Amino acid sequence: MRSAKRGQTSLEYLLLMTVILLSVSAIAASYAKTSSSMSLTAVVRETGSIACSYVNTGVVKNSSQPYSYLNDAITYLGYRSPLLKVESINVTVGSSVDINMTFLTGITLNSTAREKLGSYVRSFVAEYLLDSKALSGSISNLTYRGKPVKLEVRIVEG
Image (cartoon, rainbow, N blue to C red):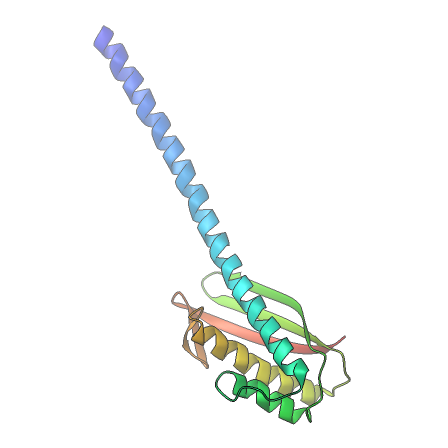
């Protein structure tokens, strides 16, 4: 009789440990997914800030990649500061990765100039993230941990 009670207690203990371990693994998986998205968001935000600082100087300082894209932006703007700043960054990680960046400019630009500036900034961001190993692939075919990345950069007047 005593061994049957012990067996039941052991079985209950095993069941309890299984429930605890499954709960911990579910929480850890959720945290890892959130942490991955948050770390990518931080790297993208930092890259956006670097682009703003560089372009806002209005001076061509570094001719190496990926800064050559921003040099083209500075030249295109006639060496005038666009007073660029990051308005929002949205990173969504699922079966693919969507990175949406919105920048505010403090000067008046027509839609063509905003699109052109956005193209230069997008190229810089893509190349910078490739160089820093945050993303892989190529500038036209970005991937994050094997998932395709869609990178959009918008410039709006603010």
